[in-house]
Amino acid sequence: SSGKEKVLDFLYGLCKYYEGQHMVASSAAGDTLSSIKDKVYSLAAETALPVDDYKAWLTSFSADTILKGIDKLSDFLFGQLGLEFGSNAVITNGRIFVVDDGDSFLNEDLGLLESMEYELRTKYIHEIIEEVEWAGVDPDYLTSKFYSDITMLVSSSMSIRERPSERAHFEILNAEYSAIKLNSMNSSVHIDAVIDPLSPAGQKLSPLLRILSQQIQPSMRIVLNPISSLADLPLKNYYRFVLPSMDDFSSTDFSVHGPKAFFSNMPLSKTLTMNIDVPEPWLVEPVVAIHDLDNILLENLGDVRTLQAVYELEALLLTGHCMEKDREPPRGLQFILGTKQRPHLVDTLVMSNLGYWQMKVSPGVWYLQLAPGRSADLYELPSKLIAIDSLRGKLLHIEVQKKKGKEHEDLLNADDDNHVQEKTDNKGWNTNLLKWASSFISGDASLKKKAEKNTDLKDARQGETINIFSVASGHLYERFLKIMILSVLKKTERPVKFWFIKNYLSPQFKDVIPHMALEYGFEYELITYKWPTWLHKQKEKQRIIWAYKILFLDVIFPLSLRKVIFVDADQIVRTDMGELYDMDLKGRPLAYTPFCDNNKEMDGYRFWKQGFWKDHLRGRPYHIRLVTCCVKYA
Image (cartoon, rainbow, N blue to C red):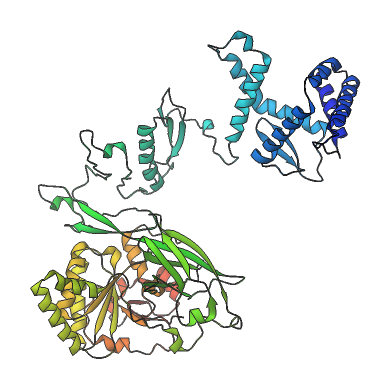
């Protein structure tokens, strides 16, 4: 309108007058104010604005009042809005547009901003406000200024919650026949959810929406959006998401039941596996389970038809990524973690993939540093104090650099003598010594006798210890594992230490293995490694177990372990494993046993003779079963 054009011309002239001038509170403030008044009056006359109104308004204010107002405005602009001194900005309805140096903001730009602001937001807000019945408000207050102020306040509040451009516009979905609508007239929260009901994400999202519906009672629309055509059923599991809720607290007393998962109407004749989906920093294991959790057949449970298992949070994860400035991640770099008194309780090394490393920890304060030896000789890293003070674990980003004069030395290219860091306290978190000592404290006479017998058996075995690594899951394969252990011990006169993946062992096996070690005179250690978050995870438990045989061999064992032989749990060993353990690998890290092919009757079962494996191997033998791993650590 013509009135707006007059105001814009007035403001433009006044701003041009101000340009290059600086108002300060001084003795000349009165003179400055007088010149400003004269300029305002002349600009008002030039633009045909009411000069008398401006005179009346300016006469009622003193210089001190204006200066205080300017100070208040400065605090708002620079303090609350965070604008820099001297910057140019336009503020409209809670939104701030900063004009960079060198850019211009002309009359036409301001007009465009005003037009867009009105068309996109202000018009709709004003229409809604005009329809509101202002009960209890004096009608004399319902002026155009009142409505304008309310419109500005609402528009400013909405600008704070501006929708990002990537937000999904659920309102365009046609959900007449495929949506579940839960209307709550009194709720100010509305939830739109689009779910594929046959997806793993849908399994997790559904119980979350149920909890939200119970606790905050929002208005909710759930749109079911499954894949249109399926060759196979995507979901092959039953899933329950456990969350704390008000139902955990008793309504009659002060007891707390705690969150739990309950499965009902399960198939009786299908073999099931129980597993838990926990936060990534958690290492959880079953501690009470009468039945085989890997092979659950409900029809064999008898009249009870109920299976229970108790899981325990064993440890948390300390993970991180280690980088070397302007170089690739320092693969093979060794870290140790401990206390001031015992600095080496846990150790690990850095992978080449993303410089990833992982350690198992418990809550407390720990010191992380480079391991003595080649890692500490080549690299610099001050000891880091790490506090594990929550159940979220800890993720660290560490940057190291090589010492002066060592920039061109390779961490992994050194003499064999420098590779192996022997560690006198190599028991990790699971130490058989503590279990052995606890038996004496408890006064168990039978265990005392077994311990004495175990010492005699160990003394009878001479030579370098043979390290055997194996994986077992389920009661059946744990029985096979015990047979394999005895077959190894029967065929060798050397000390033997067995390494087992702790993640998948049953509570019964973990209870019996200390007694078995005492009875037959061998050492053992339970080890674990959490599947990294950045590595594509297998869905089937058996495939995850198989992956542990190869993927994590260089990081799952203590740094002091020089060589280990993998033996399947269902193997029967018929010769001295020391011969294989002493084999010269000629500097190679891995050695596999090739499959035999002299029995032609088995050709139909040799899958590597056809298809993908035939093309992949290109005449080379297929290796499986016994794997000898000799890892040279930095």
